Length: 117
Length: 109
Image 1 (cartoon, rainbow over the protein chains, first blue to last red):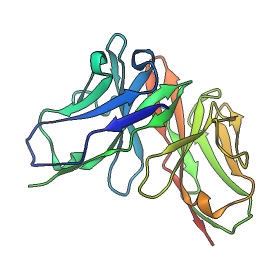
Image 2 (image 1 turned 180 degrees about the vertical axis):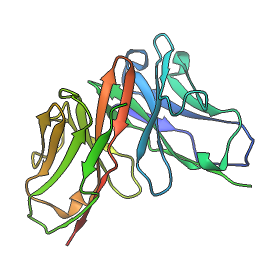
Image 3 (image 1 turned 90 degrees about the horizontal axis):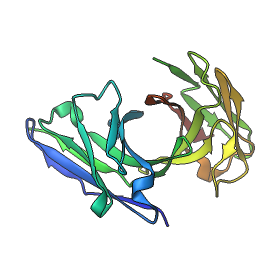
């Protein structure tokens, strides 16, 4: 069974750094792109970026380029999303997704990030 | 950038009704269009990929059609468990780019 299991909810202060994770199982982790999707409170879905764990090829949405860093450690089948300096506007639910046949066919359960002073 | 216009933004229908949601792209996207369902408090779920292909395990009352710039998502007979927000998504592979529609919140009358 394909699963993407994300790390737990985080509460941070503005200016702090953060790295959240997404562990894949039940499939060949290095053979599928893994992406990240943001959903701000009460809002729609926004694609942030995507990585191919096989060779770490990474692409970003223009809206998120330079704002976050996506990485992966194929030895432990885990992808990451990180911020170097959080802002209150980063408060959102973040989903990792697996890209299969052009669509996001599997989704993690989501990680809620709250940034507040 | 390709813009996706999804309508309506909200919809109220009765159990058994046929429900239709549309998505329009600002330029030709061939059939690179997917549909997702998000129930309250849950992660989204893929229903339809490449405009008209039903994802494995998804009930046959869900369907999609269209190509080019105009796409339609249909629930043939609305069930209570279909209460959710539905999103269209266009994609491009070179370079990778994925754009979601604004969403349609579906409620039961």
